[in-house]
Length: 243
Image (cartoon, rainbow, N blue to C red; front, side, top):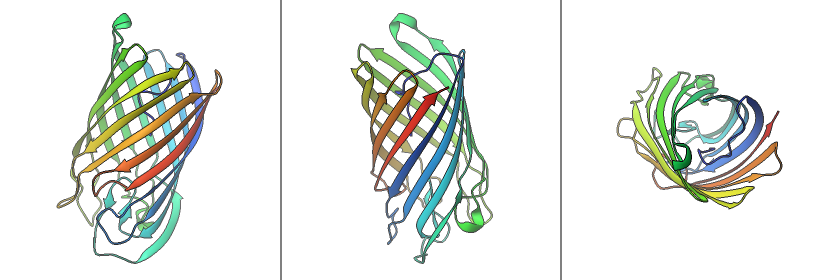
């Protein structure tokens, strides 16, 4: 849930953090499942490269046909509620800055991401398949305001029981430096439908980044969904420490 508006560490720094995120929504069904996402994140920055690994714990309470990030899948008539928990899908990301405009404040970077299918599909925690995504990121600073955006394409691995289509996605946002230690902003996210007869995903995020001291960073955020593939609402908090 972090964005390009997050604070940048000095090159060659390793950071370790943890976060918790909770969402709820009907996803076009009759019951509102609750999804709890707890993650541990490791990040390493060196030169123009940033590498990130996210290892999550996932708990879903609700119909067994709801998956994190996808909404309703498979048999959309399922109404039986259950509670299942375990390892979520591990995510690895690599980002390279390819252009830095210096005084102009304009930057461009490229990101590659792999979502490993480590969440158990038999327990209703994931698809069990790997996904791959590629995106271009741009940012421009205007004094205390930073605008940013991304455009990407995700290749979905489909399980045996249903098909997931590849999809374009993108985000636009802005972050304002309230104080040297505090940034606040808004971003919107959209994604094409990935299921046959499925729904697009559209949501907005309000966030605040607080630099507690030179090593600690705190982020809080609220999410509101505007499409059936998005949660109705969500909230989260994360804490990162430079080592």
